[in-house]
Image 1 (spheres, rainbow, N blue to C red):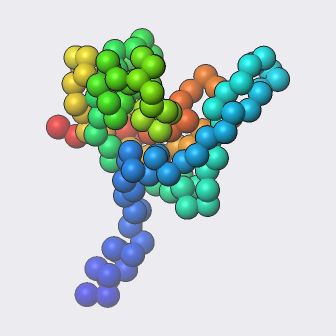
Image 2: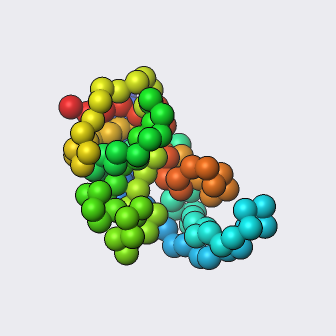
Length: 138
């Protein structure tokens, strides 16, 4: 019995997806090396503790060219997504890095993904929320 309790306590805690991302505030900062303003994420201690933990998230596949093992997942359908000016922020998209090349997806297909959360505040070639070593849950 004690072994079971210990395994539950020590097991990586799975965190919620979009709800967690929605807790992050952003501020506009001018980035000298880019030459323009960007929305900079302000990660509090609670979300920083979740960095590196397993996360599960469901969302819409966005048909953006991002490589064979990487995709963008959106909380909203393509017509309302962050990239289309739907009035929503970066908390509604996630960059997914699959552990292995996934099957082909159709635009707006709803996917459920499980992987390790990586918070990104300084690499402007990538999204703020990245899920690494991701697996598709069928």
